[in-house]
Image 1: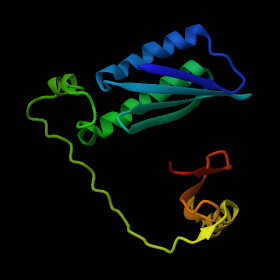
Image 2: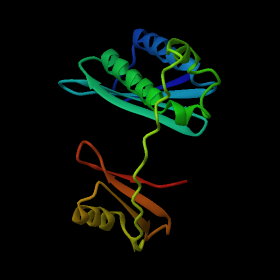
Image 3: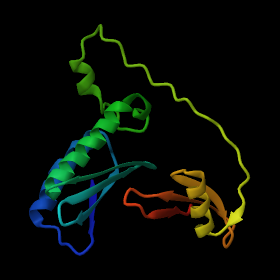
Amino acid sequence: MKITYAGKGLEFSSDFMKSAEKKLKKFDRFFEDASAQIKADVKKDSESVELTIFCGGTIYRSEKRANTMNSALDEAVEAILRQIRKNKTRLEKKLKDGAFKAQFDEVPADASEEELPKFNIRTKSFPVKPMTTEDAILQMLLLEHDFFLFRNAESGALNLVYRKNDGNYGLIIPD
């Protein structure tokens, strides 16, 4: 797995990089050709690690905060493993053949396979009006939503604004 590291104003130690490579080897049984990105951020009271794995058009992501980067990486790896196990039936077509074979061998023969949860999907349509990013954020706040889809008045493309965990806003622009 190809791993890239990114951090604002910090250097990754060789020990952390070796540890990260060892921890990410857990995913080799799931992915054939994958790449990972590790972003780190150091604050006064804690350190955060954002782990993103790209494989065959599917993106697996987890962001965790802990006292050390190693602890945060451990938690992020475990979170992605939980996501994969939780959605194993849906993901089996996208993952490497035999990725879950060891787990099935451990399960007794009379154990029933977990049923997939039913998604209750509410469909809603609304007019997508051209507006600026600032107007879209204002509209999102007025609706008390965490995201808002709009047509960008400058480019004419569909964009999405969203509220981030730190209280700031993000803008998604499709390619």
